[in-house]
Length: 231
Ligand code: FPP
Image 1 (cartoon, rainbow, N blue to C red):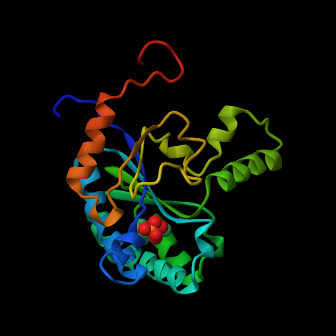
Image 2 (image 1 turned 30 degrees about the vertical axis):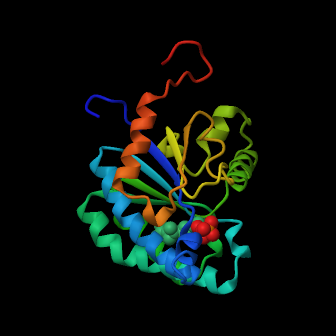
């Protein structure tokens, strides 16, 4: 892999926790716990590989429609995650960011998130950007409304500059685990030219070697950004 192109920014749709648990005769929440453990493993590997930004789809604006028990478990896991890994992210010099409308989350979770974002804001080895109550269409509407309220012109660039991720650039590679071939409202605007990588591997089984395969595949793609020559 030496000398091969690596993406600067990877987005991951972490799908398949439920099926992973069901296949083991367990409740879906068991799969979400395994999925959370995998977030730790993959985050470490991503930054060790020199990738600058990792955007993870943890909870979509549509996930509220899941059974209350499952939503509660996901919220609990997020809280535990932020509390438990804050020290580690600090030590690893990783900045945490959140994209999505967090105003509807419990005030306890909002505080834990704010604390992590604030405590790591000057870290510069990498950015871990987590989508919580995130939906790309809502993000685009939010950006347009921001522009309207400022009385600024609506252009492709100005929308881009007002997305949650404006600071972090666009994902070069979007990975979806769990076998579905769709983007499910994830980074639709900033992912316009992202290379897409789909795998049947369920998220809790998506280990370091699976991530390396995706990065290798990215290295083989020819990105043209609508032009003729590769840039
Ligand atoms: C999709 O699997 C996964 C989710 C809806 C949640 C993803 C959340 C985590 C991995 C854990 C929390 C995240 C962090 C950052 C700590 P699914 O339930 O739709 O699986 P299925 O398609 O097999 O039913």
